Each structure stands twice: as structure tokens, then as C-alpha cells.
Image (tube, rainbow, N blue to C red; front, side, top):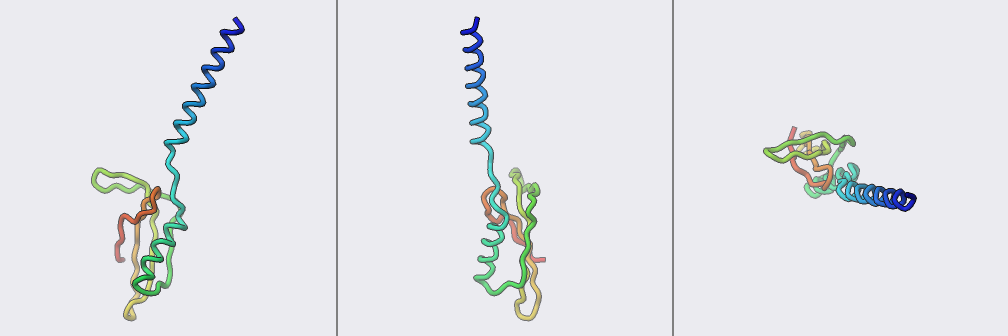
Length: 104
């Protein structure tokens, strides 16, 4: 009877370890919001100086056609030809790729 209990305990432990490993490997990690903002700022600085920038650290859901993902929302402000320009952007929270830029 003791050998059977030992075998059942071993099997249960192995199954739990396998399930934990699968869950850990399939978990997607978020791209840091600060790094996303740095990349966007670098891209805008190639066209000229910027005055300000911001990003929400909390993700929000975004859908376009059949694709749904979590995104960071942020913005860039700059002066061009004595006029204030404001841009808002959405960046994929898992890859850091910019998915949309709009001029406000």
C-alpha cells in the first residue's frame, strides 16, 4: 500500500510540474512602456526636435478587423513652423511595434 501511495504522489507531482511548465512557457510578457516611448521619441527626433511626450503605463485592448491585442497609448508634442503639433500613437504591448499614429 505504501508503494502505491508513493507512486500516486510521484505521478501527481510530475503532472503538476508539467502543467506549470506549459503555463509559464505560454505566458506572454509585456514590452516595457518606457522602452516603447524611447523608440517612438527617437523616430520623431529624426524629423526634428520634440517638446514633450507621454505614455500610459497600463495597457488597453485594441481591435482592428479580426486582430485583437493589448496596446500602450501615448503622445508626442512638437513645434513645426511656429505651430504646435500633437500626435497620439498606439503601440503593441507585447512587441513594442507602433500600430497607429494619428495627428490631433
